[in-house]
Image 1 (cartoon, rainbow, N blue to C red):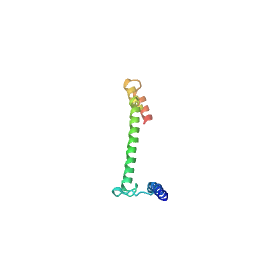
Image 2: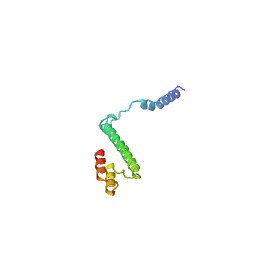
Image 3: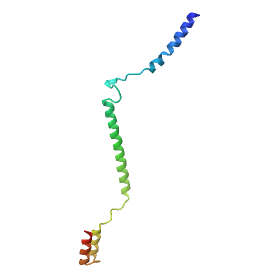
Image 4: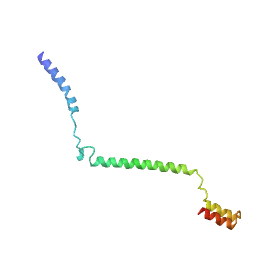
Length: 104
């Protein structure tokens, strides 16, 4: 009976060994990387920031381009309107010169 108790105790004790092994801290030293903030970790973090920055810039520029597609071109400047009025004969030379001085 005593030998059975020893065998059962050894078997139960052996079942607890993987739990003890899992609880230990593991050393990740693959390919010379000692921790995630090594040279590769910092480089990957920088590349991630650059990637997402480019994605955001592309989205903003794309949205701005889509918004401006439906708009009419800008209205003519006041000097252009004044020149057209003078060319059509709506105003004479003195009025044109006076208004041009006011605009400049």
